[in-house]
Picture 1 (cartoon, rainbow, N blue to C red):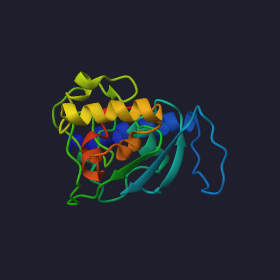
Picture 2 (cartoon, helix red, strand yellow):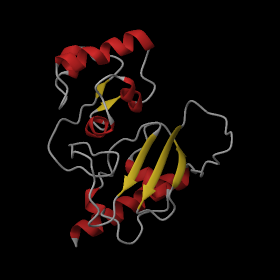
Picture 3 (cartoon, rainbow, N blue to C red):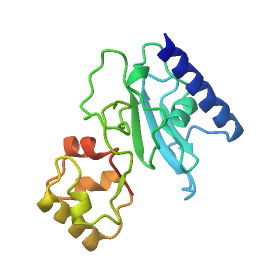
Length: 183
């Protein structure tokens, strides 16, 4: 019961914060990109799933509030409302009983799951060396070297999803790394 009250208060704070800086649903037609804003696709158990434009440094609580809050049946315990969202992210809020393919992490994951222990410091894909990348789960020295090589050949990572272009990283690996890295 206490958890439900805490989640309700947190979402209310997010809604109040969002009300002071209005968030709009983005029309998928050619909307000019404003660099200071980020785009987050909110899906799953929220009142109004869709693509939202948020201020930089927004948190999951802001994205959920922009989508009208949790829908009935949302697995609110699986959502880390304090986690920062990133540009281009898809935030999926699971329904109770819905399984996720995400590996839980200390900072949460794109699906809203995550309650394990781990470092809250994110590894920056654009500045991390091989040794720092090697600290990530499922990344060994060879894959860390491929990430650095990709960055050297192609320039900065523009989003975490760019990891899919690195040989040896697929959807499941990306899902397990999504909330441990940033650009």
